[in-house]
Length: 70
Image (cartoon, rainbow, N blue to C red):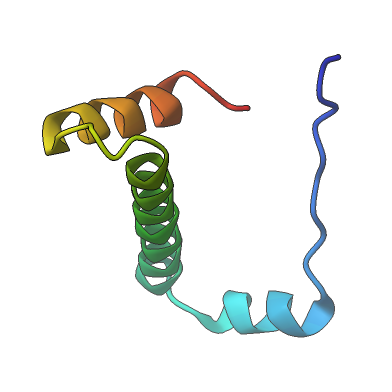
């Protein structure tokens, strides 16, 4: 079964806060969110595969981010 894309709406208060930020501030927030998501993925993979070394974990994270959207 194929996933249907979902668009999340931002409430008015959040939209106004984001409008008042500089582009660099918004980019910094997005980067932080990406870093946290990547770290969470790495921790989950490490828990699922305790035998993997750091290189294998990094490769798996990279593969999931680049190719797997599931």
